[in-house]
Amino acid sequence: MKVILFGASGMVGQGVLRECLLDADVTEVVAVARGPLGRSDPKLRQVFHDDFTDFTAVAGELSGADACFYCLGVSTAGHSPADYTRITYDCTLAAARTVAAGNPGLTFTYVSGEGTDSTEQGRTGWARVKGRTENALLAMDMRAYMFRPGFIQPMYGAVSKVRLYRVMYTLLRPLTAGLVRFAPGIATTTQQLGLAMLRVAREGGPKRVLESRDIAAL
Image (cartoon, rainbow, N blue to C red; front, top):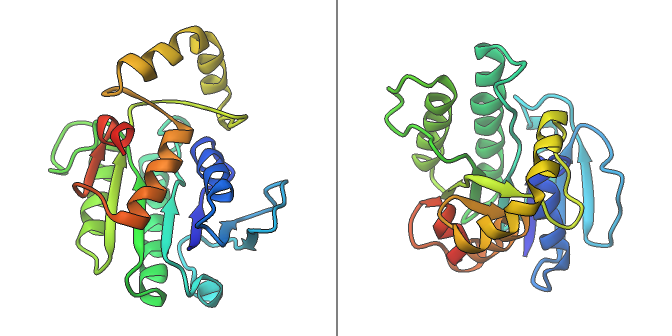
């Protein structure tokens, strides 16, 4: 199985990349990024690209894939509504259109988030944008699955780029293992996300929108 990965430098992407490289069924991981990831592996091929609103220049590098795991995203903190929409909606759809066009039968998984607003009418801006993104992906001609994790525990060295989040994870570390074990409806791990994505790519999922409990079950 050939996998395309967006967002491999982020916390979730780091965890998903680890599980892909460990999986015996995965023969190649094509990580699309703006710069080097700082790691190497016989299965890993890095494709460098700057304009995440237009992937035409690297479309040929993304052909022949079985699955695309889209883990790229930002917090609303420090971003204007316009910037957040561009990164969350425009970049995601640009990537999805490119990989779908070159890979018939592709499975596309998108890391959204708990509280996403599928109606696109709610009061919370980020939830509306995420909902709009999900709806657009689900309307495309591909097998698309929306992953909506709640709290995510970083595992095996996965680290958030956001300093505030790193501090939070450090402070909550004594509690997070218990949350994941006893409250799968609100908490998951980077490892579980990666394993669940791989299973969906191989076998499909029970539904198109997967909440934290569904991710844990997969």
